[in-house]
Length: 270
Image (cartoon, rainbow, N blue to C red; front, side, top):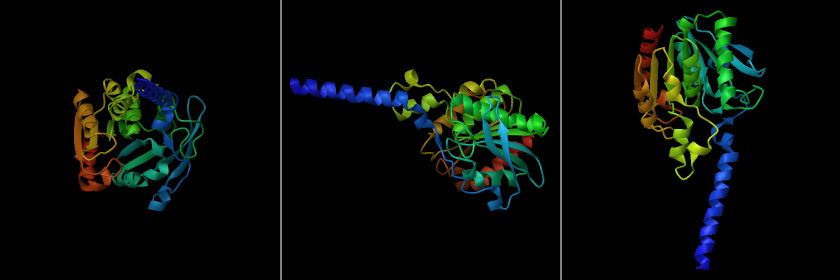
């Protein structure tokens, strides 16, 4: 009996420790920033402007503006939760080749941006970048396409729910961070302890622009069903592209289909 009681108490203690670890260390499960800039658009033969943009709460974030030779429109790029803008050169090249000026920014705490990442902070960083395009550069919102990959898809969706744009592209998105967390850690009451929301499907209720959803059936990080659920939740104009390849290389593995489908969406949106 004492042995059974010992194992029960030990199990409870381990679970409580795990619970405290999840409660206190949530940011560490979501944000994986890197301060090491490994490349610039110049490494890909692209001209660019190296920018500093100040957010409404006084944080100084870094960004690149990469103009297109034969401009079709402008893409605001919200990247995923790891690395920094220097790890997105291949994606910048793809969009630039489609005739899009690209503004890509680093969230606070990423790359050379000041501050520390937070959910509200990522939203403010995206908004500051959007306002740089519309107010500083004077680009009409009807010429701006918002793009987000992975975590950035939720950031882009929230931005689109509150600001007009020509279109919204969601690549490898999750329905919400709590949905994904509950699937990854079924023994932890994620929905009750999470301080984060990133509720993509909720934001999409207020998006007026046409939406393109892109997801790989091979995605090992965010299951394909999230893309399907997001697409089903959209009541307005929408398009779905199914890729092959992993979470991080689907756009490369499915390159011809990816480029053609995005180009077709841009024809409609712009």
